[in-house]
Image 1: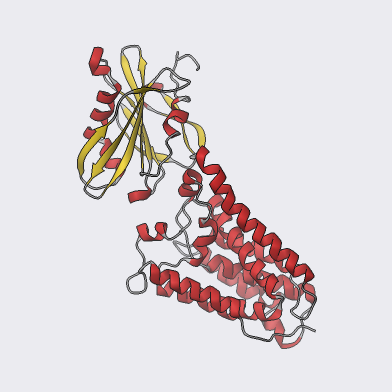
Image 2: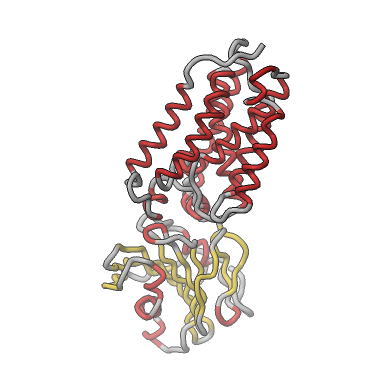
Length: 377
């Protein structure tokens, strides 16, 4: 027979950790700004794909934008999570939290590129686990209010409320709910042997460590490149996955990761005016483009100055490379350019990245630059 007893220490610890993170982010009074949300671990698909910051898949569940956001999620976690924790093996409950956290943000990253955060996906996962756990274990009596099919209408009503609300990460809710419902079929009542629960906790720990390690090992090859994207005058290049068009003119097309401030990255394809001699040099083409307009894409405030280094050759392709630093009154970004000659017309690929950006990105992209009649490398 199922019994609910003890103090839900794991749930208490989870809520205190979320409160501490909200305090650290400075959001207790007026809420957390976008830049701080990104700094403290909000799920942002471009940062996962561009930098390999897979730790966000877990950390985003512990971060909240303001006290009201935390209060809503804390209410659900305390009432439902506390009951589940006191009914199952402690190892099973910790494993449930880990799997639902990863399931929430993984589904969100696949289904939506918006910035998201909060423990609501975990709350849906715990609700889903309470349903399947109660159904599989045949819970009876007063505990049916907490476990089993009786809570399905309430669960569906909460999910439907999210579908009708703006700014709600329904992909994350669905991911948490699905993961929790599946895992709930394997939960072990607290009075049963803990051998199976220990194995599930080990699997959850392995999944968490694997997720974190994946980003570390993959980061040197990131950002990952996607399909060719259009530039000016039929020029094409493979842009990083998830980047979107950020602007265009007669001679240039820009793409960015859609983020702001110190997290923003962009790439621009430019076909300059025909030129001869020194006026075609890569440093002159890049400097002109950045000073005229591209500095606005960097999101570092007003333009102050641009320092460019020496021109070098791009490996594996007939092109020149130049690196530099753009300084604005609110920060700085790395500037990297790869320049080609198309007849007597310079074609430039200019990448703006935060100081921790990828040094190899411009060369990996340069290899993919094509236009009608251009020979393959």
